[in-house]
Amino acid sequence: MKCIYIDKDEVLDFLNSKDCHIEGKSYEWEGEDVVHIHTTAQPHAFGLVAAAHWHKSSLPTEIATPEEYHIVILSDNEAQAYYVNSDLQLEECDIHFIPSKEEMYSRAKGILEVDILSTKRVMIIGLGSFGSQIAIELAKAGVGEFALFDFDRVELHNLARHTCTIKDLGRLKTDAIKDAVIGKNKLAKVDLFPINITDHKELMDEQVAKADLIICATDNNPSRFYLTQCLMKYNKVALFGRAVTRAEGGDVFRHHPGGPCYNCLVGSRAHAMATEEITNRSQLPAYVSEEDANAMIQVGLSSDIEPICNMIVKLALVELSRGEKSGIESLETELEYDYYMWANRRERRHAGWAPFNNAKNQPTILKWYGARIAKDDNCPSCSANALLDLGEGLNTAALSNNYEGIVIDTEE
Image (tube, rainbow, N blue to C red):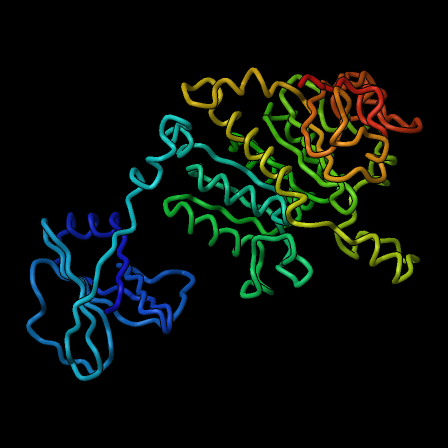
């Protein structure tokens, strides 16, 4: 017997309409006897596609077409579904309902303010291994509006850490992640921008102004610096997340209006550009050998970026729910730092950290550390002087290769 899934919201819309019959589409997972029936065609079909006829009250009087299709009969009290085979024989099917919006997020009530989140707009710049996961997690939490930015397409080397699959190869990341977001939150509004943000400044101004929260998940500092200017122009909150080489660790920076900016964190542009993570060949100098290139582009395991993505999602939910009564409101006073650090392995810049099994109060791996970042009086982005710091090293109040000069919370 075929198993039929229909959308409760679509059912209610049809029952409340003046129509007695509408033609929709059915999508069947081939060989699995699972069919999803919709009142309208879906933008990205899956499985075998056939006609679906929706009726109120009773079966149609004529069943004449030789093509196989599905019939859904609705009344105020019940729903029935039938499969019409090529011999014009009716086969009754089991029906399951895709829940309405209220039911879908009922488990989150008391923890998150779902009704508040449904009106929030999140702008995500960069839909790689970070941005793609963050978008989907926020959709699952009930965020209602998204603006997704990325000009890249899904490539084979993305798949090891990305949410996309082999079936998405060649697609724009914006299109693929929109499908994933809608798959988790069917009522989400998703606007797509397959562009390079630095080439569309008027559009960026418009979108930053509309967003309740901006998440920067790009893999280069020029885009982060440019976004910082937009944030200060419109007094917006933003989260910046990244992994360092081979995902040996990573960090998250939170930009609040009036607080330190991303440039305050990294200091000299020249130094920051030299130390950012290299994730694809387009970022490599032309003279790099094939062996060195392969070593430099080793981006680490998907499991290594999961903790960093999770922290960004947690911080995002705190910001989107700020000031509301919820189960996470206590985090507003606990997650109060500008900057958060994470290390997956005692390697390279983390080599001098204490071992995990004997760290005591010293920084160690697999544990988050919070830090307060001082505003840089000579920051090229946010200072009154707006002078470019061309000194050696990073901002002395921010991060060095050994994390010197930063206030680390090491309380157990």
